[in-house]
Length: 363
Image 1 (tube, rainbow, N blue to C red):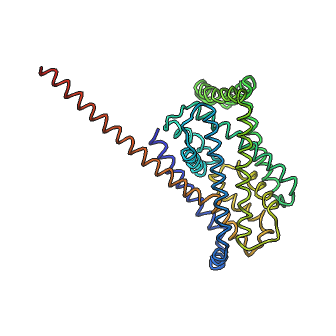
Image 2: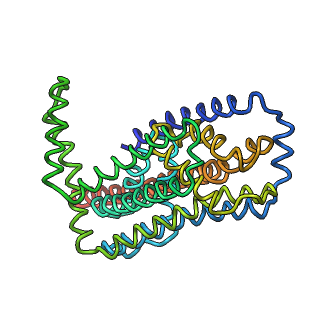
Image 3: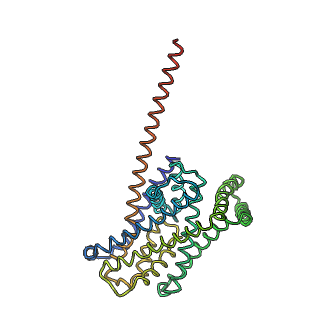
């Protein structure tokens, strides 16, 4: 399992870096590097630090969410720092895998390595995912209605694709959690489609799907008996997103601009995130940068839009990818050292037992 994770991580990381190189080459190939550097140098460092702190608040809110839910599930020894470690590990793997599919499974895996039971780790992740999806979709729709000018040109169609995919994912998630009967019907329909497509090993696939769905159904029992905790998780999801959506305004202020207000930037970022979050690219690289340039062009102007995109994505994404990578590597080294110490102790015990056995035979 460990080797498989390492190989996938290396493969995804290479693809991730390649996407970054291609994206920035296309965006900046016709730009003046000197002008870009000068624009970045002229930024107000206070607002950049504020933006980075807002992103830290984003990650800390999710960590607090993990800790609160695990506490409600009986895992009382989880500190905020340990929960932050899980959050950053999840963020890193979400960033380097298509449509952020790798974050949750790896986060659950590392939770179990910290002696948190698999069902509880899975349940906390599902509840947090529900809260996050509800908050992003709700704010995405409200902000698009309040600021429709952000959906100029063909952006409205990409936005509709994003909101549809996110909405469908949330609907399916809630169905899996709350309705076993409807879940079974959806599973039967899915298996029928696979049968029509002449997919092999259908029985095995059905068993795997049903095994996964049982985890969702167990979550409904917790939610029904801890509805207050579920509502709190949704509220924390909204707070988390508010931190994130406020960062571009800090970049705007850092560049010395004043014409637009926080609300306008909040609505633009809400539309941007809702549009790109469901698209199957690691970290939404390429599409996120491109749509940022379109949505925020009027606010920053043509001279500053490239620098603003680089700074905004740097603070909200690339900075914390680097930080989370450091956490992943540090944690891997620590786990390896712990395993090494355990192996040494096992060998010592085996030697002592062998010595005792030889001594008994000699007597």
